[in-house]
Image (tube, rainbow, N blue to C red; front, top):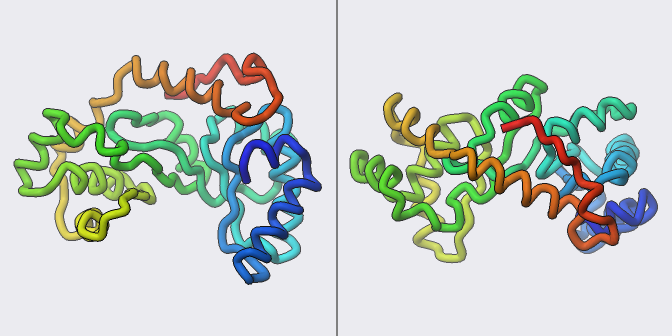
Amino acid sequence: MWTTTIHSGPEAVQAQLEKTLTDLGTDYIDLYAIHWPVPGKHVEAYKQLEKAHKAGQIRSIGVSNYAVEDYKELLENGVTVKPAINQIEINPFLYRKNTIDFFTKEGVKMQSYRTLRDGKAFQDPAIVGVATKHGKSAAQVLGRWCVQHGFIAIPKSTKEHRMLENLQVFDWELDADDMVTLDALTTAEAIAKFGELYRKCVVRDTPLPIDLAKTAITED
């Protein structure tokens, strides 16, 4: 559910869901997610999805790009069906451990996008070093790191041979030293950049001013 629909209110949310069901030729969707927690709007959108869940149109509700504060806002406003997943960017270069630990304790599965960091980390010395040590590719190291942490990893490629390569992360393991090395790749600068991007994107494609976005994201 994109930001523009969320901003337009519950009726627009339901109309978009109905269109999606029609387009897919089905009467239910296994998982339907709020894409961004649009300030002042996402709780109503989520509650509409709860109604669709009760009606059997959605088997599970998910969220994407939710901070701890956004999740708490849902619960504080009477949401009763907890999200099944929170899909956020997760890779060794943006490992928001406090956020991940919080959602995990809440029983919300963490799903990673930009698992492979769009290929921008394939030449990073730490990644290359671990890949060489195990005779694996950089993409496989990034994917295995996510799997080993228990995240639902989404690698992205349009090439078949890379898709096959990305699948080969289940029959080997990173050792404890590898995990320590990879876990330490997230910098304070990366967390700060995430905060800036979050504040920009929660109002993306809507008429809402960026200063409505939360200014105190306490997670990392």
